[in-house]
Image (cartoon, rainbow, N blue to C red):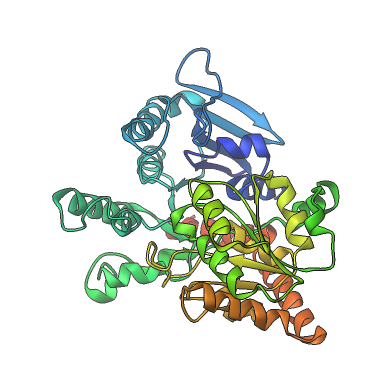
Length: 420
């Protein structure tokens, strides 16, 4: 029985929710005969709570055949210095404790958000003399540079880039979650064709996805009591965070251009720091065709999306580099709902274009978004149903049964690389 360790600082929420990328990978792998352990922090990132560790540096628990190692970390709130300490303590206590677990893995996957999870994976793999797989779910430190938190040409920026290169050089395989992320290595001229060290053959693309079995179960078993979902109107739905990067104000602006269409309503599900601004915009424009619905449980999202007529991917074009694709979880939930999708940003490697399941606006304006909404609204039944079918077909290609088979291909690659 092959043993796999997946290091993901924030996977503690997956233990609670019994869902998410690495939980679904682990569940599939256990069914295929692997032993899987997920390594995460004991401190929850999005709430002031933790898994209690009575003594020592870690605690092990098992759920549905998946082992979870909770690493003792300092409390973190927000995105400031405490969060950095939280990351450092996770790395330090993981490195101090893993030898005590009494087991040796066959493969290690170190998964970002932050790079110390990948560094730990590489160092532990060297100790055990086994393959190391680094999973890059967000290009780092590029994301930090794009938010202008650190300048790329600063001393710290150069050190971070050097660390990133070290991770890529010392990984037996690299998994990117966006199709175009390997382009980044070529842009940096780190690839062998450019006379540098990284073999692009060790780079793999496994996007985020959706567990269609659980999604369909939630549609049936977790209905959401909302009268706006049950009428015959054309329901345009956004489900997600209300943050500047999500640029949800564009949806409010689009609602202005749709006033005269009495049976179109825009429903926004989610919460975040932009909520007050959005409420004020709705009042300022005196709109009654758009509603902020507030927080809803993740388990209710499949039902909400299933009742929609059209789903909106809404982002800021300027606050993120979209040229390499999209790996947002909501994209695949939207696909699973079998409804058309509109994106208000133009993306490289666009899955909406590839699967012909939606449209992209010409620019990032509310007027352009309204025009694309009307394009779907005015489709005849046959055209609309085709978009729906294509959306669900796309979801099938990103079901975790399919994605786990891709992950097994990575295992085979690194095994052959070591002559196994």
